[in-house]
Image 1: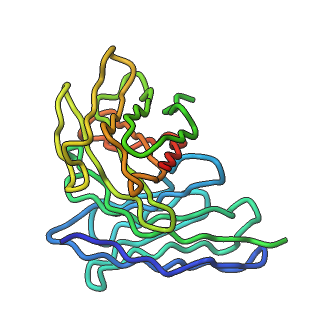
Image 2: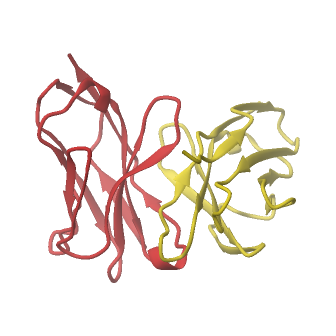
Image 3: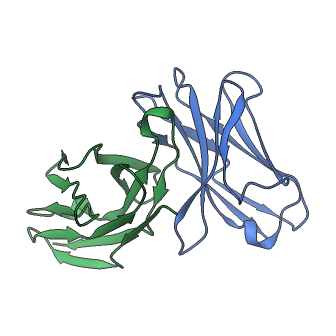
Length: 114
Length: 114
C-alpha cells in the first residue's frame, strides 16, 4: 500500500543553520507530494507541493524536489529561523485532482534555538 | 483570510457515550475530510465527503462513525459509542475543487475517552 516515512525528530538546530528533513514514500504510479507544517495550537498548513517527477516545490525559503528515482521528497531550508519551530509532515495523494485523501508521515518536530 | 474552524477544542467523554465533533469548512469549498492523530502516531485519513455523500472511507471508519452536513455550513463527525482507543486529535479539512485540491485544515478537536 501507499506510505510515507519521515526522519524521526525532534530536530534541534541553531538559528541560521541548514535544515534537511528526509521523506521517502512508497506508492504505485505518480502520486502528488506535499509538505505540511503545524505550528503550536494550530491546524496543518500546506507549505509546498509537487505534482510530478522532478518538480520543485518552494515556499518561505523551504524547498523540496520530487525524486522518483529515489522515491524521495526531502525538505530543505538554507537558514532556519526561530519562527520555523513547528512539526513538519510529509504527505502524498494518489488522486490529487479527484479530491483524493492525503497519506501522512509521522511528522518531524523542529526546534530552532536563538 | 477564510479558515476552517472546529468545535469544541477539547472534548472529554465516558466510554460508550456518543460524541459529535463539529467543523465549519471554508464557505465555497466542496470537498470535506476528517483525519485523526492518535498521540505519537501518524495523521490518518478517516473519510472524505462530496455532494452530500461519502466519497471514500478508511478501514478505521466503521459503523460507529458517521458524517453529516446538516445545514450547508457545518460538517460533523459522530462517534456513536466511544471506545478508549478513539482518544485522538481529530482534524477537519476542506478543499475547493477537484483540480485545486489544496486541503485546508482546522485546528483540531482533542477527544479524550475515559
